[in-house]
Amino acid sequence: MNPILHKSGLSVAGLLVAGGCALGPAVAAPAAPPQTGPTATSAQADKGGHDRRAERLVNVDYQAQPNFFYCGPAATRIALSAQGKEISQDDVAALLGTTEAGTPSALDTTRVLNQLTGGRYRTTEIPDSTAKPSEVERLRTDAMKALDDGRPVVANVKGTAVDTNGVPHSYEGGHYVTLIGYRDGGDSIRIADPADPADSEYWMPLAKVANWIAERGYSA
Image (cartoon, rainbow, N blue to C red; front, side, top):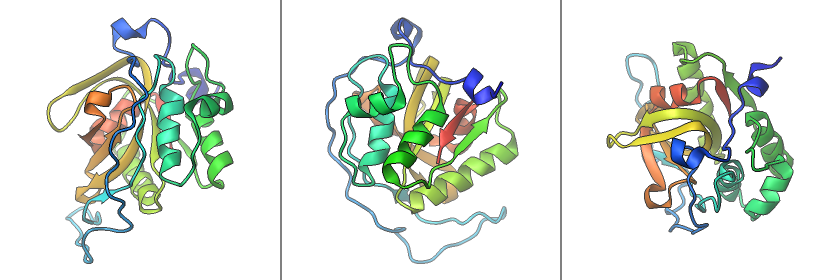
């Protein structure tokens, strides 16, 4: 059995107490100014050879999920909004096959993103409970390339991860978030979280994001 199917992320009923997808109104947040390129014209490489490009943020139309099981549709819709696709969460949910048991896996978010945007997304799995260094670097490469192309990444996560401000984000039953930016050569990733309109965007270290995705996958 394909592990990404077997260990797919679900925002399931009953997870509100356990730290799963939280209820939140479908409220649009003010969008950041669009950025069509890096904020600096020069690039420097660090000792590991990573491109130390200036911060990249993709302009998205944030909308919180309206119920406990719509994190997949909401995160996918956020990614689509950056690419000029105006589609409701209900329509995205229908395409994803989302039910009260959630959205099955990153294979589904990839399928729908490709269906609506032209086929450049690919699914990458992090099969073990902790991301290997090579998988962390793969996420860096995939996220930076997608975001440089103006394509936010949809990630299926599980468990608790702490952002750069020390705030924990806990989804023990599984959740979907959207990666919308990077800085410091991809060492930090900007996350749009549809479950938390009060803290809708935050930065998180790359390795923590990769370990958050572990046992699941992402669409980039």
